Length: 268
Image (cartoon, rainbow, N blue to C red; front, top):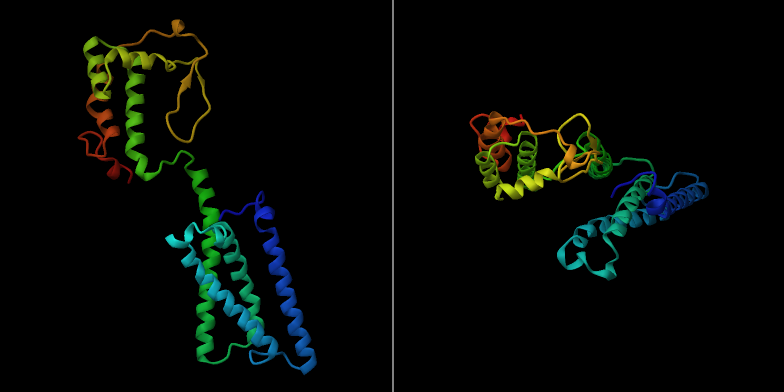
């Protein structure tokens, strides 16, 4: 569940207020009970026992989130939404911290209670760490890799880039009919259709205006000049041969290539 300044009040405002009020009420009850007996109440006192029971009930509720995520209960409307469960899981889990401290009276106790306290501390710390990573890591990834591709879509995006490379080479280099047919066959299209698609893209020259970049799919250059004013193509058999022999194969499949190697190995 992502948390930021824009949605915090809407999603978590009431939960924060409720957890704060419950904490203040538990502290006030403990202070009142201590003032009556003259000593700080522990786990055996009425207030300490009641707060311990409430904390234990919250522990069982926290475990119920596992059942909520199972198939029979995931879409059950009477169990409320998963977002509501996550908000309750976060704030009730944090509420157990003051409840446990007040229940123990600020004392660690014997070896068994010390062990329980250590396990409880690890669970709470791991939950806070997981919440922080869930909110910080996606933002860091978005800033570091804004055009990141989902792993399962790498092959499809590679084929898109291969088709785009073929169109740009045809547009910039032109070529004889034989090379056009070769490139068109590689793309699975007739050469005339491929050249027609290529002509819809901007030429590669200094007077181009870039369109707005997109996070996925092809990024297309747009020209402010009509098609008739495009610079004539410059034939380059070397580029066309390299495109058909190396670049298209490299982008279209994850297999190894004699000149470029494999994508998996080259990423290192």
